[in-house]
Image (cartoon, rainbow, N blue to C red; front, side, top):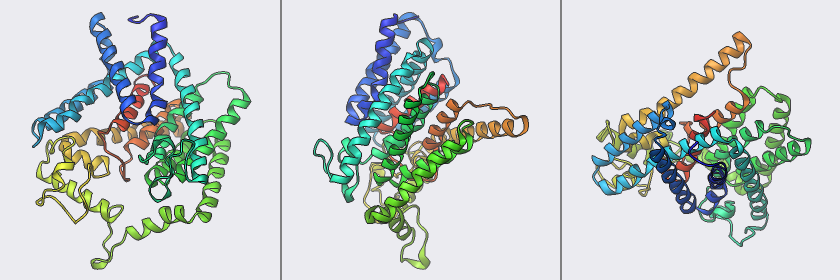
Length: 409
């Protein structure tokens, strides 16, 4: 024991407090995560408790971190790239801290559940208020194209925040003991309202993640299959009604994607997601071909995408190519890319093994809690979609949280 019980609970509380802090923007949650990571590393070094870092998850993460640093050192702008790759280690340390806290005192699970419950409830109230009134409770107007963003303001990531954290929220609910019927009913209502809020946020990638995660849970959750299916049907029905009555959402989810998949150039060439995304992805592919082993370095896409020898199309340069896999190919080469691809292969292997044991042996290999964690992993590693910058603070914190619960799953 390297922490006294009262200190342990305080650190657990602070760690869970990152959930609502993420709504305020990247600075405060990243600051808290960095402080907690440095503090935990100091405690481990002072007490010679290195055993917490002796696990396969952290070892793989450590090797990936070293690959990112090597890639940065070989980049055209070493300092810019190192700002991203060097700091990445704090995510792995934070994950070990979360797993340590769970092992020492499972009250952290209660703290996380409470913060999830309160944060999701507040976002639901504010998000629906903004949808119907065109501004939220603090007076923030809807975003570009009337996109609901709640307290995230100009940063249109409400749907991303909800959909990436919802599987973990469900997992924490699944393992709660002595749940009363009223708590179950309230949780289901929050689940339905959150799902619909993800839709009205207008984030197409988040909606795809929601559908993928929901179908995965419907297939693999062992308990309450009928109730889960009914809840899914209710959500789909509500979304269908909104889709037929809201022309802007209809255009965003139906009309615009279909039109953007085809361009008027020779023989209706099929593009990647949209004409803009197609240009970004093909530019990233050229970057990979230019430096296939270790890439151009983390955070370097924003600088190299203006290179006339690499650039494809006339779309404006952006900080990242909007796909994790192609970004890692461009910025960390095949070696960095192989870690994410390996994680996808690991996921497929585990799920196939779970399915085989259930079909042929009649055994449940993965608990419903673990299935929820794997649903969150699936959303993170799903390859065929658009997404944000792999190395952005917001997403890195979510990686650290998921990794922490996985290590102690």
